[in-house]
Length: 478
Image (cartoon, rainbow, N blue to C red; front, side, top):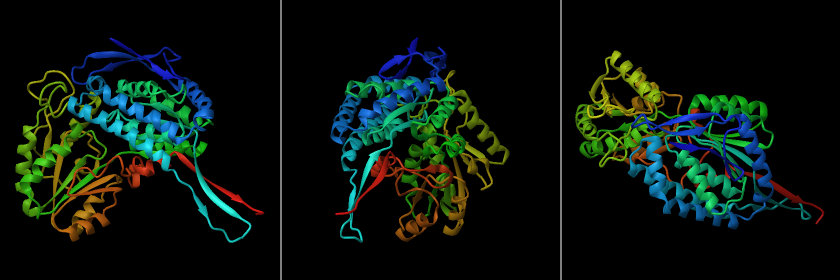
């Protein structure tokens, strides 16, 4: 049994209330740790510490900050096996995926270490000969970062690295389901020389901590990765306190597959892309729209590929899918499958507890056909191992179906016709569109969505400016 504490002002501390919560391994259903379960009181202490630390951290140069971020990135790489092992225990994902995620997190710290040096202002010509004006960027101050469990290293790294590079101090609240990873990242930064109070990591009640962030006058912004429901709650609260927000929320990504593609090759890549991290991905390809004359062929080939995927404990050789994160999440996915069957959807493969496993929150990956646009699988974010397929005939029809959602995060188009690809991409209302690829994102690329999928951007140069304020300085009488 491991005791997990909070990291506040450079020290590992218990929650003020001494509250704790059991951490469950989703693959074994065993209790693996007692974690400190804090609340708004702990958050207030952390914000006060970050406020004090900002007085000096905010005045450091981006070159000084970059050296610390780079050292932290290298510490993550040097300790990737230990950190990834703990990620598997708390999240269930396969070890190879956990290692890869930590390497991407390290890359984000390297990227923003350099990007912080390029927050350039500009000199602006004026309409008077005795006047000079220029702009400069400065850090916001203390920011709150609340992140989800599905990518416990990648999600925080995008925000922490950008905020720290910008000169902000951070009060972070990783998911209570994956506290090990956030604390390992804090350890990397501490070992790299990050001063006390610049980063604080809370574990505990998300609602209470979020409320404290909104109400504290020194916290200038909240970056949130999670559900659209919680994002709306934060927006309501922020309207009263004028707290700025960046929101990376839910998704319901359409996959539009035209009939000129290589059906065999795409069925293989689609099976891997959809079930990455067990489908628990905000940009997961979700609603597969297949042109009518290749629908049956694609469904048959895809089902065979999905049936081959190996489900099991993330430490076992060859495992491609681990468990869902909680029993509640497993039940949510099972309920959606049951609703689809009541709507006459046909489960071509999967959807049950794997026969070789008797514990854990596992589901065999499923493919569901014979669905109408009104189906529950078309309008709910699945966030699990279910791949629904729909048919379409014309480009106009599929664009209408793709846009039939309040979400607008990512979308995917597969065709060898560049005119059709670009016309489709232009008319679908999503912030990120992949054409003939499954990864329309990257460390150097802006990540963000339309509509109810959020506001603001992470990664890329855009991610840095989310934590900077633009100031105009104008000098007269010259």
